[in-house]
Image (cartoon, rainbow, N blue to C red; front, side, top):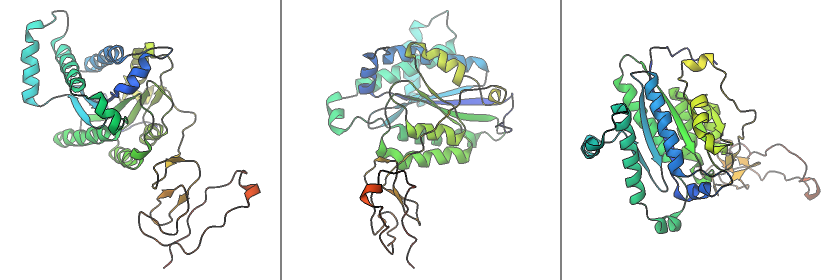
Length: 314
């Protein structure tokens, strides 16, 4: 579908969410085709510089989706930015465009500080899930603030999620809220699945918002995937045949146990999903009139349509 709200004179704001879960990156470094976070970061920085080089008014923002919390890597507050700028002023590379080096130095310094303050022992006790939902929310808030300052409306934002962690069913509800907020704001969400199995939730994010979803088969060629699939701006995408998904996993997570379900019970009032029937909806407290009829034990293996809760009893 052609995006008629864009033009070739637009300024493109690219918000990149990097999954920095140390546990998953440790597994990726030991895979058949290994890719460590250091190697991936080198390729990501080249991609960022290529985005900035496409147009003089292109902008970029980088957010780390860490274990337990999220953090801005670039841009930083003025005080932190000045400290990094003064500390790196003595080692400028004459063969590198100053703006590229400034962005690179900030991202690398912020990422180093993030891992210096990471206690692996405490993370294993509290959980190893990446906070992609928190980073997604921060990206939407940042985009809203930037676009509010743009009175002309020339800034066209998009979000790119670089994911290595599996789906976290506990984050389903807030993640879907972020997805629908991005859809309403007209912000495409691109997803690059670098390592691990397919993520059903992020597949839904790219499909609902009109973004691009790509699973990297050869992690050593990550830069090629980024350049060919995610570098084109929103206006250029109107004239390109970008990768698309043949099949999308639209399974949801139940509201009771936060598990991904194939067949579940849906409240007819608030549309909450449950893996087992309950006489009262735990979300909206609606009481159902009767228990749904279950098929005989010998017929339960046959394919059947999802069962729904009965209408609310007035």
